[in-house]
Length: 640
Image (cartoon, rainbow, N blue to C red; front, side, top):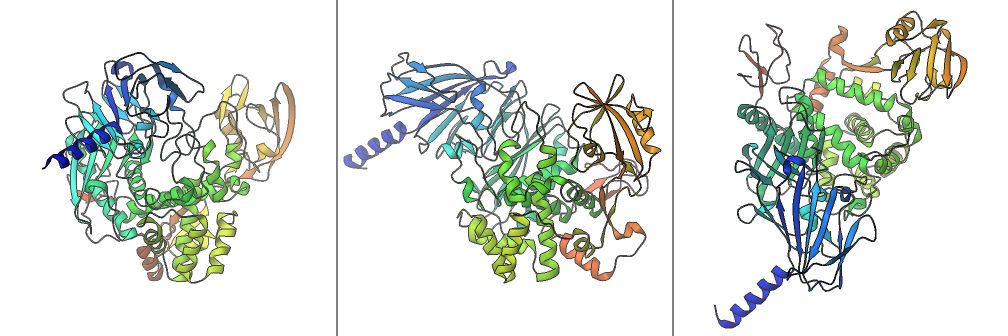
């Protein structure tokens, strides 16, 4: 290396270092849920450095105001001189008088285990970066360097960030940091490789839980089956940075239920153990991994670029989240993790929460997507009428996906997998953000009928018209019927005993008898059909004596005013979906073939999974829940 080359290298290195943002994180008071963070900003040209805290987080569509957990703020310049720190609005600080460098010190608090917030305690540091790290305005492009001082010598660090030394990690820019969760604990780990066109992908299960290493290994096998089945939907894996993808999981009694997607990893939290609600855990794994295609790379233009300073509204969440929700349970069914009977219970849930529910009358999937700002873990103290006017874009979108998949199969000789592959190639693999018009155009290309695609989007996406699910599901040999054809009801509402009556705990549902009687949240019912009701048992006993279409009198109190209403008893509107075999009828060959084409595995190389009977020690396909010989609940590991 000659002198000029050496001089050039020194200058470039100094420039890169100056343009880098450095964070140092320590945990001296982690038992009280605190971390101490130092952020160093160099080469500052503005006389006042505007430092901010994120208000929103990638994968969330509401405000979370992370600054509320930041305090003990101070700053100094590159020479250690104390600097003035002011706060002109609730979302950040202004630092002046610096010498081109600002060292910003603060304490951050976190005690919530999920995919959005920060959790610091004696067992771990569970970090969603927007909840921990401040940033400087107009410095998003700078390289990032993180250094952690671990509070326990047995703890390790797991993250999709690139390692650059002992407890040191780097990110290409602020957006990459904010999309990179970090787990620091004595976690268990199990890894496996899966072939891909770009080379083998190293998958890892990072599991912080109270279970055994054997359970961790088995959950990794489940993950292996899931990633292969998900790949079959799109035909290929995405290209993961560093050729790695990690499932970062928290299964502890202190965790909240959550799942959060990231570009090269996902965070899954649940208070149940692996031995508990396993299908829910597996479904969440499938959901978050499906997001590696749908929303991380196949991304709506309305979310690009993600703005951490405000709510990010999108009318395409019915597709980004809802279609993903359709595929999560479909994938674990195809993978043999969930039985067809169990899958019918999932379909039943969709029917009752969307098709039967009156909220769909207040807007279609696109409109419900736009309401995410008020529903996606958003908080408020005032009462809302959400029960009547909002159908979550997760369930609504999944229900639309179900109808579209079955319609494509029965009328066009296509599948929803075909649609997803078409979109992946056009917008996901190329990472070209799409619009709703693009989704509509692609559907028209798939079925060769642009007008039919436009009608579907006008009626079902922008409108609220849904297909005939009973007819569509019959093609697969599934029966849609009333779940409780003769059960009387006065409404789907939460009730509680309250001294001398029954208290209505939430909003009554539009169309229900209690709603038609003018009763709502907070009202108290004293008698039903001339019989006093002072307990839930008494209420249910009176209901048992009634029949649908009976006319009954209700005596109640509303805001201190006594009243009497006469209402007609309704029939429980709940639906259920069951395999035709459960009705005593046979599944025809045609319907059996249709069901298999829809629900059977599409992966050519997935390993087999088993559950075990602790009594007879036999192994059975994973979809079975009970031993056919002993009737005992099967477990996921032989020695559990």
